[in-house]
Image 1 (cartoon, one colour):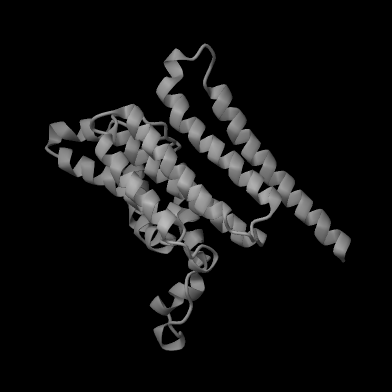
Image 2 (cartoon, helix red, strand yellow):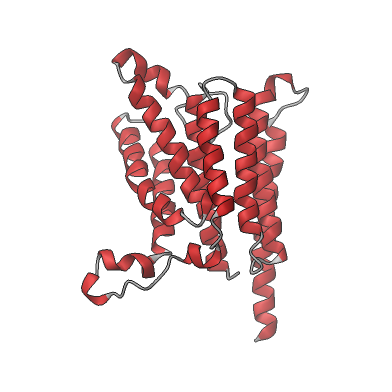
Length: 253
């Protein structure tokens, strides 16, 4: 798989995980590992009569994130993610949160970048008179399968339901869903060996965030060691892949 296409894949996987985990964290009252908050949003909105709205936000994050993770339905999820990202960005700016608006701005730019990657399929929205509606999204070209992604999405729905009853089962179901979404990606034969290694390390990082946050109090060591090693392993693997690809290009010239 070309580097541009692989980078697009990594962005979709990252955004998909970011929002599914954030939504499940809110639904489990902060007990599900995630990267962005606030984890207690539903509880914070309840005194203002907005508890149902809090659930709507959390469930929307999970479902939109699941669509982005699915690859086959990623374009739909990425489009739905734009107003969500912009809304989060405006809230952080309005509340004068220190540093958070910059982080959210990066997520928004990644979202827009992932949509630009599908420009051939989306340009009819801006240039309808110059565009033929015959360009399937690249995600559908690379990942045409629908059964495994659909099962993954259904599992995220199940995780939303379980989140109100059992945190451990929620984490188990979500972990299986993440695994299925990655299996859907890894069966693509165009993905090279080093790229598979990067994907494997990123899945380990996701599972580390999911499980370490749940059992961190019972671990005899700092759980950030596991998470840090998984994240560092992903970054190092990616750099090795890029450098290796650059060396091969130089040799072939």
